[in-house]
Image (cartoon, rainbow, N blue to C red; front, top):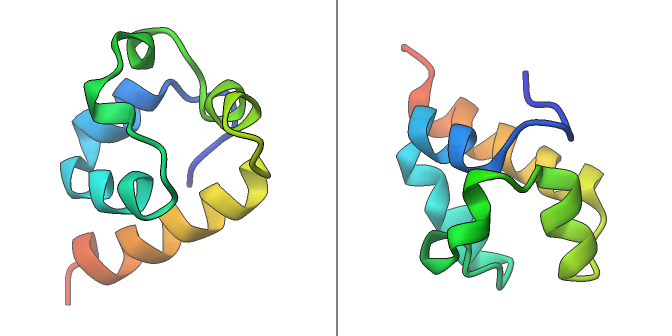
Length: 69
């Protein structure tokens, strides 16, 4: 579903509620202009995080909040 090369802004545009996940992981991405060009991987590198953990958390959140039931 998600890919480490996706731009943070694209994820938030498609799944705006995911800002909760970024905030939970102490990534204040919503207030950073860099999200327009930064990938999930680069954002994680800048915050000393594992991109695979972020993607797992985002996908879990998306499945719980955006999947049709």
